[in-house]
Image 1 (cartoon, rainbow, N blue to C red):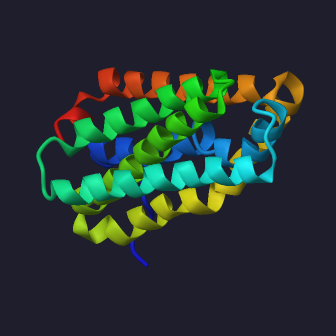
Image 2: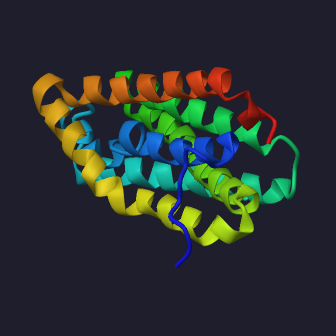
Length: 193
């Protein structure tokens, strides 16, 4: 089976990519699980409105995927990775503060585009920069993010119960944006990938 992954002895850029894969899991992704509560409790809309909001996220994700695919093999993928995740956090905070259905729908388009662009680029960078002998093991750790998404909703749900869904989403968006700014400063090698 080979040696276990030791992220502390991996290249700093590689381990930072793995850390980046998990940060949005806790700060950015819980909005999906909290969307029904936000739609009914904040925007005062029913199932039809919730369906439109979720469709807005999907449309944004499609646009983000097509944009990344159209760029091909471009330089400075790391910089676009960081900006996509930063904008995801900013638009999540703006979405949480919105009380307008149409404005919320627009913000969700950007959230969907930013989150999908981030995940696509992060996956590509991990696969291309991981040492060949560790690629399978690194990807197995990266794929854990998908399995852990439901668990990330638990603390977000508890926070929403305590302080409100809008406050929880806004805090998650701000935390994600600040985390990415910190990574831009502390891990400059990410910007050069």
